[in-house]
Amino acid sequence: MSGHGPFGMNRRVLVTGGSRGIGAAVVRAFAARGERVAIHYRDAAAAATALRDSLPGDGHAVVRADLADAEAVRAMVDGAAAELGGLDVLVNNAGVYLAHPMLDGSYEQWQEAWRATLGVNLTGAANATWCAVRHMIAGGGGRVVNVGSRGAYRGEPTHPAYGASKAGLHAFGQSLAVALAPHGIMVASVAPGYVATDMTVEELATAAGDEIRAQSPFNRVATAEEVADAVVYLASPGAEWASGAVLDLNGASYLRLRPLARAVFGVDLARDRAVADVVAVPQAETLARAEERGRLIVDHRDRDLGAVTWMQRLPVVPAQLGGKAAFVAGLGQMVRAHHQGVGVIGVLARHGRQP
Ligand code: NAP
Image (cartoon, rainbow, N blue to C red; front, side, top):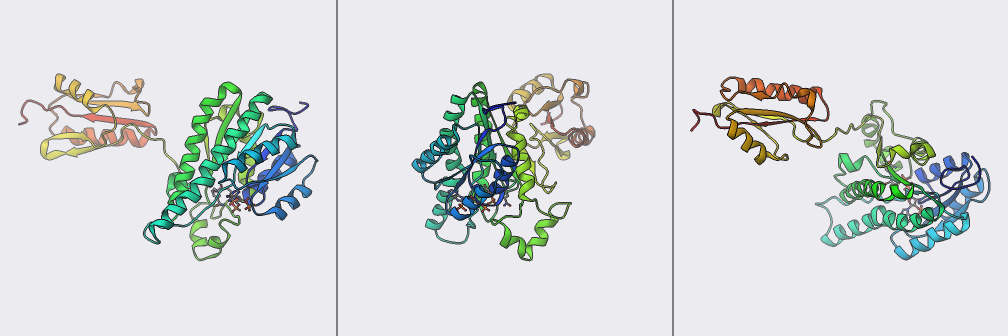
């Protein structure tokens, strides 16, 4: 590979929040692979400059902006592209983690926490992407990698705006993965659990630190370098097929399950029937079918509500359920337990003897 551009070496990479923590590790990882990097910072000018001076290769740049300031973001991205001679990769890494428990503080403080958090973590990243994508398209394609968080899935009870901002960032990445693919741009996110950086150093040093480490069966938190390696992978030419992905980096501390279309049966023995306990699938439609046939219909669907063909032999159970309700309910539980990603829809028609 030669020259620069989206798929060659010596690509032009912009890392927001590159001055410290995960961002600095991402900067070092790209530079070690022969890429040229623009290190974005807000306050940590000395750290950003020292990092640039320590990098292998030349042509690296330092750029500044408050990500909450849309015009400053535009000037920063355009400045990075001007200094590097274009842009092939954007890493949306900068972020804030502000505590604002819902029952503490005033209404004004609550609003300020939401404004400050979303302004940087979500809108800031969206604005940086808007600006960067124009340079990528001019160069024939590119990569956008978002640094999201496990908190998007696990919840952030004392930092709710943070959790929401990261869930939003993941969703933003997935939307753009579809929208930008025709332009040769792939978009993906990483969702790290705790990482040892300035953001977490105080918390990890308290008594809660042991508890946090114990969340992972490896009994530790991540290093910034582990996150950086994943970001570099997602930005690599060979990772196009990971577009739209959200890659968990949490040391098995939180296992996401694929959402099920419908999961569990409940049993209503008093009324002699099995009932589905979630109501997200087209139940009305299925009910009508069940009423019509006077039978209990157990359907197996994947998460997109497509029928899972090889299971279709199980499904139809005659109307006179009686004691079979419990069996059918158990069957539903069993299928669910053994087939991740398969939902079970159960609907019971009124049968003859029921009032
Ligand atoms: P960090 O050490 O606190 O560094 C935060 C970076 O973001 C700094 O470079 C900072 O720039 C920049 N930044 C903050 N506010 C900014 C603003 N208003 N405008 C522009 N830049 C701003 O954080 P980190 O732990 O490396 O986290 C990096 C990313 O990983 C964040 O998005 C974070 O949410 C995510 N993450 C972290 C963890 C973790 O446990 N550490 C876990 C999951 C996800 P200056 O220093 O120059 O101001």
